Structures are given as C-alpha cells and as structure tokens.
Length: 491
Image: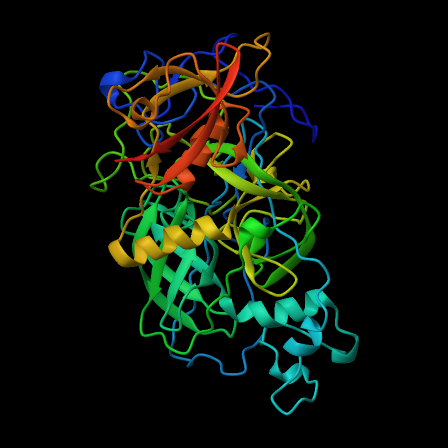
C-alpha cells in the first residue's frame, strides 16, 4: 500500500520481488503453488503489478458524537406517518482501507440541451420548483443548470440504505430498478462487507418514505446486490444509459449519501475507462452462506489489496463479529474526478441526461487510516451495462454468472518487450485449452479491451457471463495471433 501522503500511484508492496504465477481460473487441482482466492480463481495474481493503484469501497460511517453529522433529507411533500419508525443510523464505515492505488471512474455527461428545463417543467409547461423531489432545493428555476435538471430527474430514483447484522451496522446508497421496489446497490453495502449473511435492511427514499427490505441476492464477484422493498409501489426506476458509449472527458454526476448526508450531488468528468482495480471480496465467510468461499489453509499471506479493512476508532462504530478471510476480486471500472466519499457506495453515476452510467463502488486514498479517508479526485464506478446484467440475473435466479478462462496467469517479465498477461498454466479441456491457448502465450487484448496485466484479464473475463464468446489477441514466440474462446462458468 502506498503509505505516503501522495495522490500519485506508487508501486504496491509485495511479498516477493519478482511476479509469480497465480491461478486465473484454474480449478484447485490445476492451481499453482501461489495462494489464490476461491472467490477469484481466474486471473487473480498473487501480488499486484508494480505501480498498480489501490482503492477503498465507499460505504458511509454513521454519525457519532464528535464525528460526522447524522444522515438527513429535507422534508418530504408526503411525509411518512408519525407512527412509522425512523431509519436506524449506520454505525460503521462501509469503505475499506487501500493498499494499492485503485482505479475506477465516475461517469460524466456533456452539457445536455434542455434537460434542466425539461426536468423542472410540470405538465402544463410552466417552470416550478414545487414539482421537484423534496430533497432538491431550486430557488430560481429559470437559472437552473444542466446538473440541476439531472438531479431533479434522477434524485427520486436514489435511496439511502441502512444495514445491521453480524454484529455490525452501516449505511450506503442504492438505485431503484422497478416501481415495486427492486433496488441495486453494492454487495459490500448489503452484507456489511461480508459480515452479515442475513442483514436487516431499512431504506429511505428521496421523499422521506421508509421501507423495510430483504436481500434478494448478492454477487461478491461483481460487488453488486439486489434488495427488495416491502409493500412498495409507484417508485421511479432509474433509466440506464449504454456505458459502452462513454468517452473520457464526458460529464459525470454522482448522487448518494456520503458521510450519511443523503441527497448529496457532486459533478466531474470521466477520467478513464476500462480501469482494473483489485479490492477485497465481500463474500460472507465461514459457512454463513452456502456459497461463501472457504478461508485458505494456514496463515493468509500479507496482501497489498486489503482495501476493505475497516477502522473502528470512531465512537459508536461497530466492527464485524468475526474476522473475514482475505479474498480479493478484480473489477473493470470507470474512473472519475467527481467527489466520492464513504457512503456513496451503491449510489448513482449519471450522464447529462440523468441516465445511470455506473454504480459507485470505491475511492482511491493517499494512505492513512480509513477513518481519515476521503475523496482525492479519484473515484470508481461499476459500468451500467455490467451492473444491469448482474441485476437482471439476480432478480431472475438469485445469483449471477461470470466467465471462466481456464488458465493461470501472471505478470510478463519487464524485459520481454510485450505488455499483457502471461499464461502460466492451462487447465486441460478448459476454455483456454479448447481455444488453442498455451502456456507461455501473452494475452494482449480480450473482447476488444487492451490487457496490460493479469488483473486486467481477470476483470474483463468476469464481466462476461459463463458461456459467452470473446476474441483473444495474444503473442506466441514473438508472433501475434487471435483466437475465439467460449468461456466456462465460474462456480
């Protein structure tokens, strides 16, 4: 982890000086000796490549005496009945510590003609702030900006989520998927970073209504989860954009509840696309869930990816009841300079038309304890297209599918003259083997995305569902070639 108070990436600390082979999706019987995470068997390196960044998930700590103010939202036009209990305040940070500089992005949209006027105009065609959601203050509709219009359109589709369970509590954000109450958020929000297999969920809508909710399914490989609000109707679903159409430099607008401050809006641009970050898995450990990964035998190696370890030195904050195994996942994300802070996790990243382009997931930190971590202008978001696929599969079946390459990969030697992911071992009869890939091949592109490290390859393979096909570009004995691979499915 970069311990220096600097905003520039620095080489990650690693147990060894030279890169070692790491299973990229080989089953346990085909895995090399380097330790691997059961949650990330396909292209998860035993160590981070030099210069890789570190990220911290952005769940919010709750207010405590002498720390941060409580979550709030302006009065709603239709307040909840007085007998309805208030949402519990989160009491634990949902953002992990960073050990390598993480990469990701908040998405941006260019100035959109007429969006502000459209969002602030009622059905009769007259501008009025009264038609805006209760948590939006618009004093002069005639002078409203594009961002004002985006917020007026999208704010009703963003919620604040309070979570309790497993001896811990915390809060984060989410986006509404359906009128009857399906909500998408991060897995590390819904399960308190893996501490709660059966969490107690309370959701506050932008108009002040409070709902109980249940966990429909969590996918720790994508760090996404779907929850369902009880007795909900008439909610406003978020509109999805095509995240494959994004450009670096597009405007990015984030809505969430950083530090418990519901309805907070920040604005920026997309800084990078197809970034790859490695963060700690939010899979529920120790058999608390049927699909929870097992902890590795013996002492877990010191990892440069302990991004989600919480500091509980803020008064009133609670940590998990038991330590979690050290597992890591690789994510392909969007990077943004829009301010994202603990509590933005699961919230919306929007374009200039108020459409969802990503789900906030993590931030980069200059170092130090998580309790002091905050935005330094490097935030990360899960692209909308990937998020929508995972959400649809969870709603339909309770789980989601991820591709499996059937190979172990590692980093390429610095003097090799090729940038990519080196295949260290191929699983017999696996996807890579059937596509004609061999040990020693260097994969340089996957499904049209350039590959510069084993983390890149893992992240891109996981984006696709099991059974998907992709074109692989690789170098063998100095010669470039291509192959079409039909991915297996990660168990």
